Amino acid sequence: MNLILTASGLVLLVIAGDLLVRGAVALSLRLGIPALVVSLTIVAFGTSAPELLIAIQSALDDLPGIAYGNVVGSNIANVLLVIGLPALLATIRTRECDTRRSFAQMIIASLLFIGLCFVGPLDSWHGIVMLVALAVVLLDAYRSARAARSACSGPVDDLADLEDAEPDMPGLKITGFLLVGLFGLPLGAHLLITGAQAIAIKLGVSEAVIGLTLVAIGTSLPELATTVMATLRKQADVVLGNVIGSNLFNLLAIMGVASFFGPLEVPEGFLSFDLWVMLGTSLLLVPFVFGWFNVTRIWGIIFVALYVAYLMLISNTH
Image 1 (spheres, rainbow, N blue to C red):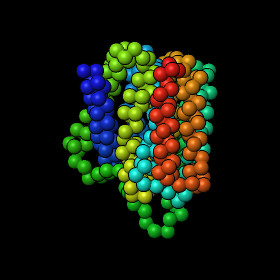
Image 2: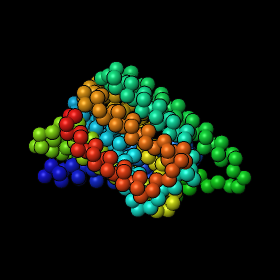
Image 3: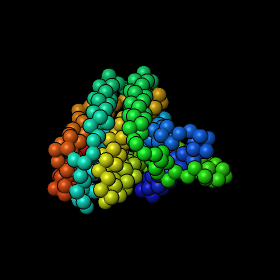
Image 4: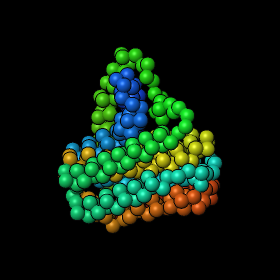
């Protein structure tokens, strides 16, 4: 029953998050807001809405282990699984894309987050620092996107940047999507947290372990689906951009907002182990971000094996 509750919450989060994004994008385009601005704000935040609601609900329920486990575990899974599994299907030709700037921002964000955790527990002032850092990243992304468009000699269709953009969506449909998203997200988060907490109690493990495994893998499934399709279409820039962008938002946006619902005590196991694994897995991307190697099948096997080894170790650290 608890597994059904948790799975139902996860499915509801994914569906509600998708509908909220599609409705918000359609509404923004009808109001005349540029697609570029929508893609950098509404889409970016909307696709992270499930993780955000889980973090907030965990803070309200005084379950910091799930909040930290969701974000840290998702970032680890995003590198080792979301890149590793698609690489088993086809080579990810990372030599053909340039994500060095956003990768550097992700590493800086990781170091900032680790530093804040060591002066934790995380509360509102930590959240302000993370959200200010997020604003700097978004501003830089906006300027870079504008510069890229200015450099183009031909016309550019901004709507191509938005997945499932429907500028002519009927008003009633927009309203329905927004309502389902706004009501479904908190309900899904509540179901998932309730089920995950019950599973942790029944199995005799900490909520941190559940957050790092069940919740983290579950919330990484949308990124995995996107990455598999991008790999098969030979869009390496989408693969790396998806992972790097997701990890940035997990650290700065999700934990930044969740900190206002704290204070969030940092479990000891995170300070001594998981945060450093997160940083280490991020640094594993260096050879691929700088174009020294493509992510071939052998690298995929190594990444997946490392993730399995990590799963075997975490029960001993929490």
